Length: 439
Ligand code: GLU
Image 1 (cartoon, rainbow, N blue to C red):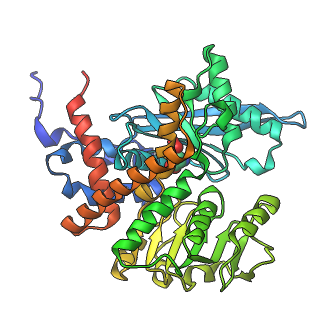
Image 2: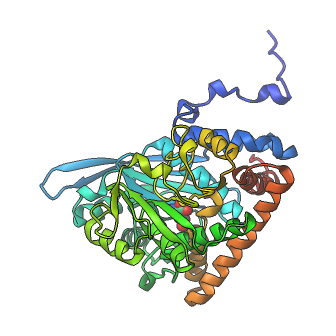
Image 3: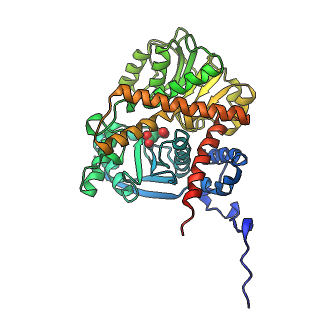
């Protein structure tokens, strides 16, 4: 019996129903939100749309078991991930998150947003992300180090200075990066500073890296405010998350004459009509672990935070905070996404209808990875730049990238998120097409 002829063209594409289950959108989680964002950009991609399926499938997913000796003599197992979403434009790049709610689909979404973010600011990277499902606050320092080292060793088969370069994210910091750099270097038998970024400055880290994400939020936010005629001086700011990103952004907006009237984090919400003393609040958070109990402000109900009277709202914590449930109450004229994925597509639509400008994560928080790129370049050349040079280059890259995105948004009459996806996905898929399919 002769075989049926092989069908050509579109019919060859695997229908969505045959996607592996972990790739299917449940429309609830961050990966589902990301897929909806991709669907909104496809009509704007022209001929490159034939490659768009690439964006919906991470290139490589690694799930690792991370067993460690606990201080009490027991053995604990943690589940860790490293996802390389796309490496068409260069090695994978993106942070590592330690959090009790980390899931594979969350890390997939975060890795995809890194692909888009890195292309949006045109740094020569693909997108990747890692994480361990763990509450690191429950670990001793020794347990944290053993877990970090074992995780690094397990993902060591796919990371490297030219393959995939991790960095800090939620609950990881310079010390964690130092352990990761050391573990990778021990395993490869050579000091390899360029395998991670966000390291301590004395270990090949970059000046300005710690503040870079917050500085980028401020830079892009200021540009966006200029376009809509909003003065920063006197603006009322509300910030969710007062860690490295939210805290730095609040400080820089404060230096420019804005006042932070409301702050929320995992410990509670606070309000201060005159504007909080940001330096005092940062000191309180460093000492107590959160904003709750800060003497310089009143306590506020968590839910009331979203309806607070403000001009600028900066979500700088976790995903899916601005939803169809609270988007209608937001009073800000502008939302600047310091966090990754804080706004759901449904909330995006509600905010657009209400004329609230959303400056999306994939450009607003790209300052961190931009200075990560500077760190990586400095590590390769073993020649280190001063902080003024780093900050000036950061501002230039962010300002230019934002100007291009703003222009696309105006021309195509789309949101800044879709405009950023148009710019970024065009770059990603163009390299994809030029490289071609192997074999
Ligand atoms: N974790 C940060 C982000 O989400 C930084 C990533 C990096 O520097 O590689 O953008």
